[in-house]
Image 1: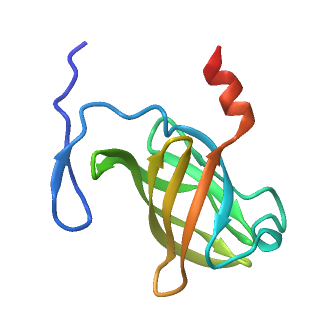
Image 2: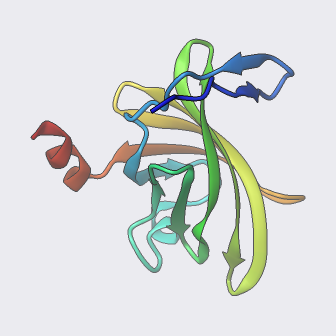
Length: 139
């Protein structure tokens, strides 16, 4: 099987970088540890707040009454030499249509970055890999 050459990825700030293969360390389920704009009670209002990145550049998330089910479109890139993910999303906020974007940088066992609503709120965010995912990776 012939592997196509990597596609260039345009990063925020205009820098172009090619990624030869996805960084599998980002794929999987991540729990929201904290957000600068919302407290734990809101983050976990309906379910334990989470992000999930699937192997085909799609995923889902939910925190509070905000969710993007199978509506995340993401790309694994590098930011300052670290594995990162940049994403756009569409979903709902309290049953109203909503959309936005964000980015996360892998730092040790955490993903840290920003979550944004289009024309609305922006929040810093920290994710930690879900315990089930850690067990699967160790096998």
